[in-house]
Image (cartoon, rainbow, N blue to C red; front, side, top):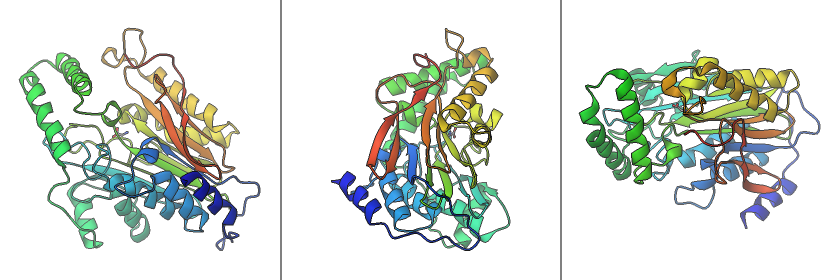
Amino acid sequence: MATTAVAGLAAAAQPLTAAPGVRVQSSVRPVVVSSSNGYRFKNGGTRTCVETAFEQMMRGTDVLDALIAGVNIVELDPLDTSVGYGGLPNADGVVQLDASVMHGPRKRAGAVGAIEGVRTPSLVAKAVMDSTDHHLIVGKDAQTFARGMGFTIEADLNTETSRKAWLEWKRRSDPLHYLDPNRREAALRDVMLSMVADGFINENHIYGTINCNGVNARGEVCGVTTTSGLAWKIPGRLGDSPILGAGLYVDGEVGAAGSTGRGEANLFSLCSMLVVEEMRRGRHPKDAGLDACRRIQRNTIEKRLLNDRGLPNFNVNFYVLNAKGEYAGVALYAPTAGSTFAVCDEKGPRLERVEPLLEGSTT
Ligand code: GLY
């Protein structure tokens, strides 16, 4: 059984030696956390993202490389329509992907935005980190960079499922394009909800994304976030995922935080940075994450973004761990038993319940 295998690995793990210049932490509990898709998708194989990342980390693989190996499973899996290959496309039917990586011990980072034609944008973000003096490369030039780095460029990352969903969105939303902006916003939201109700898209895949963070026995913290972004977005729209401090933030001495959900809400307050700064002040990952949710709630005042209760009509989730291995998954809302996040530690891979700031759901 997977749990036993991973627990065995933890027990059998080789003693880890610190790389030169890396501070060794005592009493760290190694752990990997991610959004729940990190526990669900296996791309036809036998292991999930969190299981793979934890196993590799415990074998001594660099933490960031281990996390990226984990999210690659989800990026490559056509069944996850929120990340990588088969991610829901933009309004023109083109799959544009965003990703960021941060390496705590090395204090390095890299990201790509709106890249087309590469199934694993997390690896291109890592190439930006490793091979350039930059932190973010976007659009056509991100693809040119990837081609130059030897990545395979494909003409189209749609699958039959993502294309069918986009065509259905066009069919339902085209007659609405000439409404005034407020009515159009409301109408598009109704289209989205009706497509969820009719089974064309998964509610959690509207903003999609996987974030995965880990800390090894040496207290080395890294993180990665990768996404196809908001379904049917205006071409070129970047969400929070490729923006350091928003979709991902890592401070090697403190911890890591990353997000899924409505990127615009998170971008406005750079919440992953906020979470890490709260942990620096001694807050537990759960309390730091809930503080960020509170900030988002306070900054959401536009009527079109509020439900009948005057609360945000969208969700944002944070996956948080500190350098000791304490962790949490938090969100504005956790309406169902399925409101979970993925964890893997010496007890094995599992889903745990997300801690919500607000009662009820987005509606
Ligand atoms: N959180 C993913 C996005 O908004 O693009």
